[in-house]
Image (cartoon, rainbow, N blue to C red):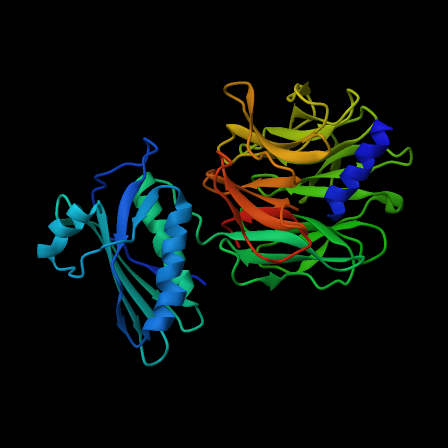
Length: 430
C-alpha cells in the first residue's frame, strides 16, 4: 500500500539581455554579515528621454521590489528630503537613511539606455558605489533595475543578488499537455521554451544555462536537452525498450546527468549518464523506488528519495553509488531533496496529516527545520542562487502556483499568478 502510494506521488512530482558594465571600486563601509538590514533611500531618478510614468512603473518600483526582496536592505520610503546635493546628505541621514541611491536614467534618440547610479554613505558623505550601465533598445528598462539591485547587494555582502535570475518551470496548458516555461525572478517576461504538445516535465538547468528535461513527445519518455550552450534541443537519452526515465539532474561540471530509470519489475534506480562517452552507470540497485537525485555543489555526492526502509526518506550517497546512508529520520514520508548552493543544507518536503511542508536539513548541525506550516501543500523546493530563499509550488491559493519564501518561512510571496505550475528550478545562467 505504501509503495503504491509512493509511486503515485512520485508520478505526481514527475507530471506535476546583457548589460554593459564599468564599475568604480569603492570601500564598503557597512556589512550585512550581522543579519541587520542596511537602511537605503532611493531618490527619484533624474530622467532624460523617458517619461515619469514609465520610469515609475518599469524602473523605480521594480528596483524597490528587488531591494526589498534581497533581504539585506531596508527601504526608507516616508518623509524623505527633496534635495539630493551634498549639502542634503545630513538631512537624509537624519531621516534614517544610511545609504542614499542617486540615479540618472537616459534614453538616447536611437533608443539606447544609459543608467548612472551612485550610492552615498550619508554618514561619511561620500560615494560607496558608482557604476554606469548601458543597454541597447531591445533591453527592457526593468533589466537595468535588476542589474543595479544585484550589484548593490554584491557591494554590501560580497554575494551578487538574484534579481536578474530566472525561474524555469513546468506548466500544464491542457489535459495531457505540459510544457517548459521560463520567467524572470519577479514573475515578469514569461517565455515558453518547449512546444511539443505532450507531457514535458522535470526541467534541470546546468550552470552554463543548458536545459535537460523529460518529454513524451515520441510516445515513451525520453531525456531531451541541450548538449552545448545555446544549442538546439536534442534527444540525450532514451531507455532500452521504452522503459521509464525521469528526473534528470545536471552535475555541477555539466558533464554528467543523473536520472531515474525504471525496470520491468516496477522498480526505479538512480543512473548517471556521461555525456561525452554515452556511458550509463547504475548507482542504486536495492529494489523499490529510488528517485529525485540532487547533486552536491562539488559533485561528490547525490541526495535522493528512496523507500528502501519502508516509506519514502531522503538518502545520501557518493556520486559513484558508495557510502549510502539515510539522512532523514523524523517523519514517515520525506522526499524531493534539493542541495543548497553552498552545500551546507538540503531542502526537502515532509508529509504530515495529508499535506506536504518544506523543511531544511542543516548538515553541519545534523538537524532539520520546518519552513512552511499551513493547511496547503508545498512541493518541489529549489534554492535561489544566493541561498537566501526557496522557490516552490503550492496550492495555498487554489491551483498549483509558484511561491518564494525566505528561510524563516515568514516572508512568503507569490511569484506569479500563473496556475497549474510545478517543478521550478532557479538559475542565474539563462
